[in-house]
Each structure stands twice: as structure tokens, then as C-alpha cells.
Image (cartoon, rainbow, N blue to C red; front, side, top):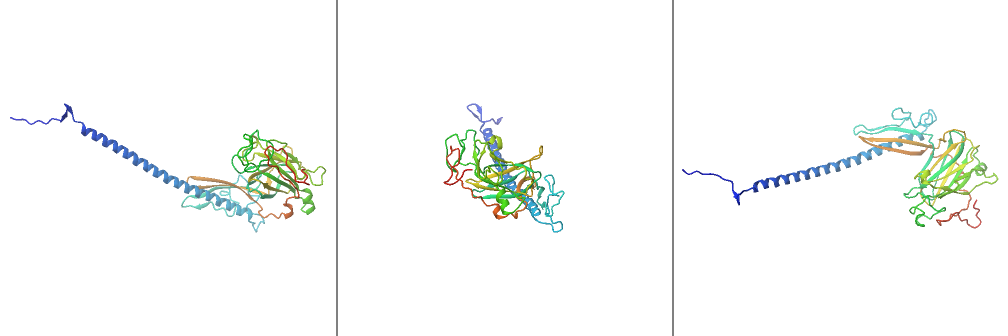
Length: 370
């Protein structure tokens, strides 16, 4: 009787494993294709999430801008019943959230209930601790009228260029630098430096031409690595008046901060009271940020608060889980009735040296430096 038997094929006496190898290769290819598919799916989801985040960020930003516009409308709109702005010093402070405890008339925080776009809290401070001017263009000016909460002893002007790399290192040579001109290596950073400022302070207790001319005090502030960086306010009729004095600002980022590396203090305001005051700033040579704060003449009093000048508006916009916070300064009286001759530049003749190692300004023939 014959018997059929089945035996595995062999190669050189060994079992044939080609089928098993094919299975392993197929599994590896499947794993690779699966990983590629998962990677592409995650990339697509990431791109989709990024696009959604950008959209929500834009919505949150515009929601915050809506809050700013609502607050500004209430600051500048007079209530016919009270004769005061809808938001005024009796009902607005930095700690009052006006969307939950609203003295504001136009506040409408729920912008879109269906998409969850709102501004969550609206803060208004009508008595901020300083006056701020951002991005003053070269050859332009800013002015603000204001009062102070206590009698003023001094005002300090801090300023710096709006560009990056504008601070002064410790070994900076005293003097001026031309915009866009390089200097000795190691003495100046980059080719962009804080501006020269013309600053005028006028107490407005008496608003007639003679009082304005006599009481307006104008000085020129220039960036330097060191200096006394103080000047004393003195009316025009005062003996030794420093009208038109050129004052070096001590530009030290370690002391004053990167945004405003230079500062000069105008002291000796005792006797001018709480104002009102007019401060007028003219920027020369470079775009600048300017911050003005002050100290009280009352011993032990906190720093001055500025009343009826600028308002600080702080609002947070929200779109689902994305938040955007904006903080701006706006004029409380955008069309303040200031006489034109109160903000004109004085007849002071100055020419500033642009040689980076110079120590004093040049003067044109016939010009008195001080």
C-alpha cells in the first residue's frame, strides 16, 4: 500500500521562511503607513487649531477694542441730566468693573452670545499716576492740561526711542548722536537713540497772555550717559531764570527701565498748587515714548495723581477660551480750550551737536545757550 506524505519544502535542508518574511515586511509597511496617516491627521488638526486660535484671538482683540470705544464714548459724552460725562470722577476708579457694576451708559459687554465673544471687565481710571505719550513722531508735539490731587513739588520726564536697541550702555560718551550715524564701537548701541525734547510747563491759574508768557518754563532735554538731570522751575521774571536751559538726561537702563531710559526732573514747583497745568512736549530727531510723573510738596504724600488730563482704560476681550487684554490712554477733554499762544514754541534758538563725543550743544551766532 502506497502512502502519500506532505513535507515542507526545504532549501539546503532548511525550512522555507519566505512566506513569514513577507508577512513581517507587510506588517512593517502597514505600521509605517499608519504612522504617516496619524502624522498627517495631527498636522491637519494642528493647522485647523492654529487657524481657529488666530480667529479667536482677532475676535477677542476686537471685543476689547469695543470695550475701549464704549468707555471712551462715556468719558467724552455729557449727560444732560447731571451735566457730567457718563463716566466721571465720582463713579469711576481703577478697581471698579463697569460691566458688572456699571455707571457706564453704553457698556455692552455681550457682543455675540451665540459665539461667546464678550469683553469681560472694563476698568477706567480717571486719576492715573502719570501722563503717557506713545509713539510721538519726530518733529511733532503733544500737550495735556491737568490738575493734581495734591500740590506739586516736581515733575519727572522719562523718555526713550520707540525702536529696539535704543538704551545707553554705561560707557556711553556724553553728548548727542545723529540719527542713523554709527559711532565709536562700544560707545553707543545700534544707530537709533532717544530724541531731544522741548518741554514746557505752564501753571494755568491765570489764563491771560502776560501770565502765560511769564509763567511758562521751557527747557531742552537731551540724552546723555550722565548728568545732574535736574532743573529748577522759575518764572521768566525770576532772577537767574533758566528759560531755554539745555539739560542732560541721565540715560541709564538699569535705573529707569528699557522703555524710558532717560529722565530729567523739573523741581521747584512749590507754590504753584494743584494747577491746573499745561505740559507741552515737542519731539526732535527721533520717534519717542514719553512718560511724566510727579511728587507732592506735602511731606510723606504718595506720588501725584493726574486729574482731568488722561484716562486709563483697561479691558479684557474674550472669545471662547482666548483672552486679549488692552490698556490705553485717552484724553479726557480731547478738545480742551487751551489758547493757541499757550502751546507755541518760545523764541529760543538752539542747535544741537551731532558729534557723539561732544559734551555741550553748539549755538548759532547770536544765540544764548542758557
